[in-house]
Image (cartoon, rainbow, N blue to C red; front, side, top):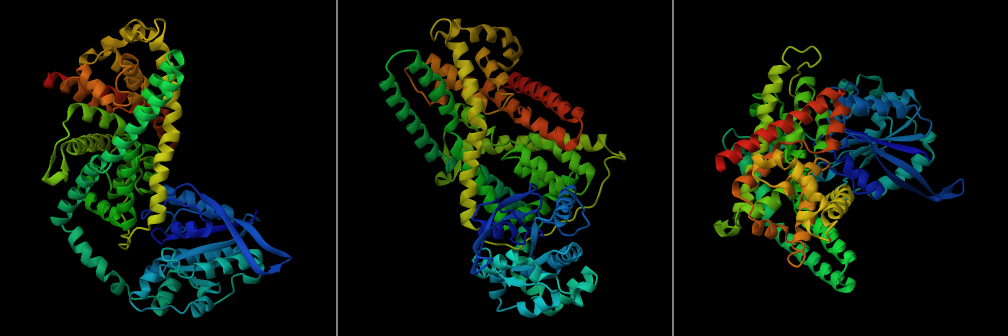
Length: 618
């Protein structure tokens, strides 16, 4: 299958354009490094006259990560550029589709003209899309695409991936050109004989809207949101709102999910009748997996809020606000993006750290990202908070005490990461391998999010979380149920699991918890969220006739103390309990000693901090 390469600078609407051309709902982001991997989809080229008797032909459309220049500054850009140059020489590459930001044409054209020059050397066809023309229409500015096409020597299409302006014309034109690319090779012009920087400035002066006109509204908002006093206050307010929403908005969905699981469990139990199969379905499946599924709505709410901040353009401002305080700990403002992404999952967050130009700051950021409270910790936090903290609201329900506890836990993780970053920064000072580089950041325009990709992202976050965690939890629940059920048919205190638990119980006695929690902690080193499934299975065995999915009520009835609960929360904030994250650190940092060193160090630190909290609160 022939290929079409989609390239462009970050924040230019490229990923959204990819969605419109392929029908896929890819992740749309306003920051480089979010789409490190190459994304591909099928583009259907249609012809009215049927070239060679074919009315339709399929092409593979490949979306490359956004880059500013063929001279890379970051590891992320160097990987993208290397992949792009390799694809240029591939015989299967038919067309290079180069996306331009109509509101910031000069910056887009520097990279675009470099790509065009390389394409010309490989005898490839280039098409330009002038994206975000809807922004120009608000200022009654129109670009003469025919004249611009003559200057560039390649076809130019004015489009808006958000409002669909010009998309049908682009689809038709791209189809014709992709099927017969030799007719549209780059034509020699005066423009493409100049240096890319000089040519970009000249073309922008002739065609582009004045930047101060477009940036007038943006600058007015930035004067507030980037203000040294109000900006910091607004940032804290937005972050507090983020964590409040996890509890406040998700609560009805969580209750509905729990009721649904209980209802289905009752039907299944009544159908099966008494026996070992009924016990397995009730305890292992609905007790283990069911207790975990209750927390999926919170994952989706977290994705929604981060997506809104990301698509609106605020995340880049947050990175700028955070640069000065983060630099005190040896980090960069760009570290904020991996840190915030780490609240969803550490693996893409570690990948996002590739965009940090400074090798030393990139190293420190990658090693401390696992301290961010990822979505896998969310079920653990939600369970223990529901047990320990009353569901009290203030200010007419806008402030929830449980949500405030969430904010405190996430803040504790961030504070720990900053302290560890400061220590690592001091340890790596003077390293020839880990050099430092300056902080450079582009602020994207403020935009309303495009709801269709955002909605898909929310649904996909829940689906992917279930796909990733459910198989592990199912296997673990099966093993835990088997060990806890036999040899005495559900007598947990005299089971194989109890025997194993008694051996390891002394390790967890300093945290004030018994062998059941010890088993759950050890097994959760496979994946943090397994903690909930394991406890759900064990407590379901003990309370088979009571709540099936209501694990929090079972823990409250069992008498989990405040000191032990806080100790467990502190442990899960710090401990690196994810084998996949360790593997990713090994892959990115290239050395086992960094990855496993972080695993051991965070485990010991979590244990000591948990002991401290238990001792103080006891």
